Amino acid sequence: MKTLFLAFAALAVAAPVAQAQMSHDSGHGGMNHAAPAAEAISGTGTVNAVDPAKRTVNLTHQPIAALGWPAMTMDFAVAEGVDLGALKKGDKIAFTLSRGADGIYRIERFAHQ
Ligand SMILES: [Cu+2]
Image (cartoon, rainbow, N blue to C red):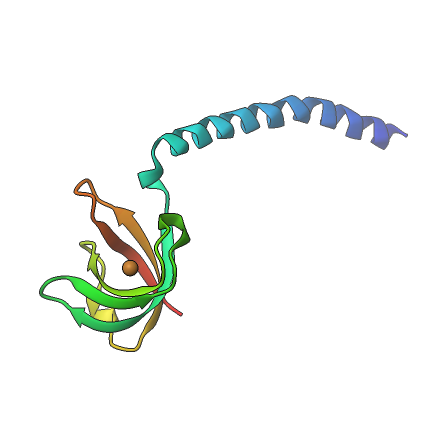
């Protein structure tokens, strides 16, 4: 019985803390809605060509739901700091895009599938 009482006491103390954390999180959620450019946009595709000089990759990608893009073959700009040497024709990759201040979507990250 003593154990049960302690469990109830612990719940009574913990509950208000959990609620406070929830409202804190939903506050951040509201901020994200105001800035959709900060959301991660991910997709998958197959590499057709790599151009290290122009820092672009030609990909045949699957639809990108976050942008409403259909499947297509296109050149993607690649962000500074991304190692293009790790990519070659025929590689299947999962990638994350981010939109720069110039409005261009660049590959920020990728991983081989
Ligand atoms: Cu595309």
